Length: 169
Image 1 (cartoon, helix red, strand yellow):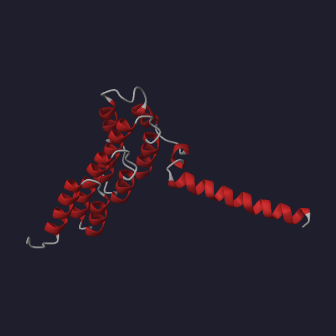
Image 2 (image 1 turned 90 degrees about the vertical axis):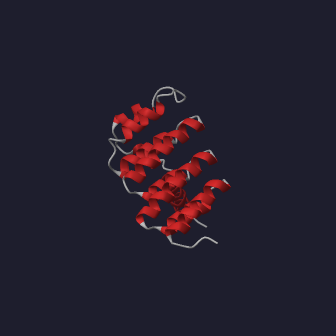
């Protein structure tokens, strides 16, 4: 094996590693941090994460968000928070705004990032209601199957059954 072959192998290996790193960054919402964005998003998440006003700041900031790109940036900033409970509160607000904007796929993506099962089930329940309103039974079923606790999952399944008009036994 000469030096040119060795350089070619290391070049291929480096290209694969670079591609894998980009895929990881895209999959885990790390690339959105590098996009130019409004400083009001950073300001909404700044300060003490455990302060009572965090949710109201995030909610008021999200009311001015009208694109999925800005929602992705807000998700990326929220995922950098240190404490799980405030992060889940921020994710719930992002989930609600995504549902308001009609982006149910992104709302599901946000829900899967929750740290606590209670927050996950709350977000998935919101998606089930919105999906049934839009007639997307498949997404509603996907959300119902992803829920952790039995009571919210059963409630979601009852909503789905009522939507498709299955008579009760």
